[in-house]
Structures are given as structure tokens and as C-alpha cells.
Length: 245
Image 1 (cartoon, rainbow, N blue to C red):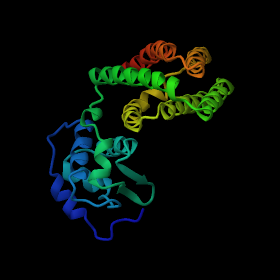
Image 2: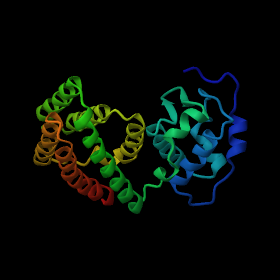
Image 3: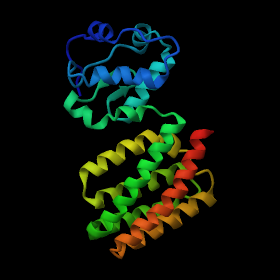
């Protein structure tokens, strides 16, 4: 994605303005997101350097760096080491990905995100049980095998776990639902990557995923939803504990 040819740094910094002292990272991210989704910038626009954004907003560079990292997770910007940070899409491209409340990752809001994710995942499992193709079933089975093979490597395990949920969402066949779930998962990712701490927890997660898989494979929507509800209760408890740490 090429950078927008004109230097828009002055325009961008003028539009931002300073924030009050002590402004949290979530507010920095929201201020940047409001500008990016306002329709005045084109996809590929290169943003001013972190130090310039920090000076304009009146916050530390670490706050800007964390805010940009959150926006990168949401798919708003593309951070390229050694090159700069670029806007990934136009306002119409970005708005579906930007739930404003999603950047408020305080404890209360983390709990609400966990509740939302649970409801979405349970519904996804129900839909998948009625819509999964043979190819979807094969992909779910492959993800389960990768989970089982990586219990001693928790980073690889987390990746395989995410693959299972992504395959299940694809099998549900509802793109809007998948988009919403992707945003919620992304916002929780900072905790999700650290949630499974040991092999025992990994094996419990495998058992719960296996139960979901068998229900989907049997085309039993009620059983799939129930199995996912059990898994979400366990996973949400882990994530909630991690976010409070």
C-alpha cells in the first residue's frame, strides 16, 4: 500500500490538538480514531512520527505507541518498522471495524466484552452445527489435532485454538457475525494470548473444543451451543482473571 503522496503531517497534527494532562491511552486511541474515520484522509496516508503526535497531543510517546498498537489490532493502521505508520483504509472501510466502546478496556468493559464474546461464540456454534460443510468439519478436526500436538508449546497452542474458533465462525456462514466476533476477539487478544498458563489448562481446553466439535460434526445445534457455553464459561473465567492481574 503506497503512502499518500502529499505530506499531510501538518494537517493531521492541526486536526488533533492537545489532550488534557493524564489522558489515558484509550482516549488517545479514540482521538486518533475519530480523525482517521472522519473522511478527510485517504487510505495509505502516512501518519506523523510518534514524537510529533505525542507533542501535538500533549502526551508521552509511550501513550501514542500503545494507542497505535491498539489501532493496529483493530485493523485501522499499518505499523511498518523503519517506514512509519499508515492508514489502512478509507472512512467507509474502517467504520465497520471501529466499535468506539471497544477501546475502553477497563475492568468493567472487559467483563462486558467477555459476555458479548460468549454470546457470539455460542450462537456461532449453533449456526455452524446446521451449516458446516464437510470441508469445514475437516478444518475443525485439523485445528484440534494441532491443539493436541502443541500442548507443550503454549504459543503454538494459542494459535491453533484461534484457528479452531476462526474455522467455526467460517462454518457459521454469517459474515456480519464473524466481523463482530473478530473485533471482540481482537480487543481481548492481549489477555487471550496469556490465558492458558500450563499443560493442564491446555488439555482441559482441548476436551472442551472436542465436545463442541463432536456436536457440530453430528449436526446437533443444541448440543453445540451447550458445549460452547461450557467452554466460554471456562475461557471467560481465565481471561477475566488475567485482565485483573
